[in-house]
Image 1 (cartoon, each protein chain N blue to C red):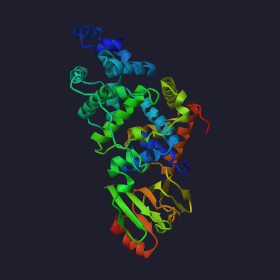
Image 2 (cartoon, rainbow over the protein chains, first blue to last red):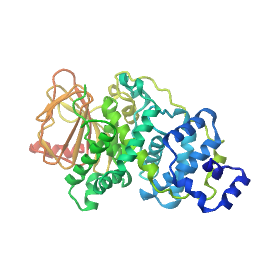
Image 3 (cartoon, helix red, strand yellow):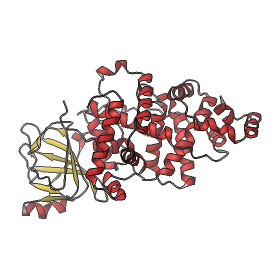
Image 4 (tube, chains in turn brown, yellow):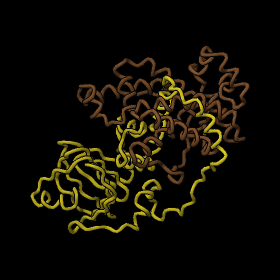
Length: 211
Length: 213
């Protein structure tokens, strides 16, 4: 509700929010749970619910902007692309499938592709609906499985040793091949790859997989 | 059944968006054949979603939400395009790049047994389709960078094993091999190199650069 009040287009509410001052920014830092984000996105898809969209915007636009800044986008471009990413979310909401990805993950793929298109000026090769193989085991998969997966990954990420989480983060935030990451860190490529292997093995264990 | 897959680091680079376009194309096309890599890439995308959630937010400008809300009315929902089905089971992700089915390609000869179709080149990274009649040899070579080969039709074999449709071979540096097309139908591969191939035979050394290898 606080996120809604902060972002609502009603001037009275916005003024109230401003008068409350910075203390009320706290809810923005506190995470929106993956299930709550999925539910809001579902309301955008089914009912074109603007209040739900405003809440998603309030939570995710600053994070998408932070992601783009981490990748080296200048401030104004990061701001524009973050707005574009959320517009894309509105436009594609009816294609969102919670059995395939959580809202945060889906938005991550939108932001990633926008960045590749706008900053690297390349296309992003993606599987098309025609390419989907029959999935015998997927029947039991639902949105809860995806958000549970995201929760487990977030928890496991926080417990990775620093040298391992660093190479995982750089894989997402550096826009460089692993050989470049090795050069930047001043360590051999083999070390980057073995740290990654260790990190990914831990993350897989967190997802309940055996090596 | 797929036996040869991209390694974890490559799937992560694809999911995270650091892999360049040609490499991403070959990974995505492999995933059109491979359920397990698709599931794995989806997991690493979820890792991206997790990292996104935990980034310290960068404040948006004061009127950002208002200006986006006013644009919502102008935009139309995205519709999925309707496309004719492939007549030879060419994955759609690849059809987007080659502008049709594999059987529509115009092959350029390089020697009696091999032909190719250039797709694109960016810096040292090159993507092409390669076709060999049964028994055709690429010629023994090492690698100036990475070489990724995805079988689309037929198959090939070398010292590292046998490769059938959907299998992805990763070679680099001093790994030496001489792929030979299997008997039966022509072998068609999607091939991406990040540096020149280093052939051993003098003839191929001279001829390869003429074809952009």
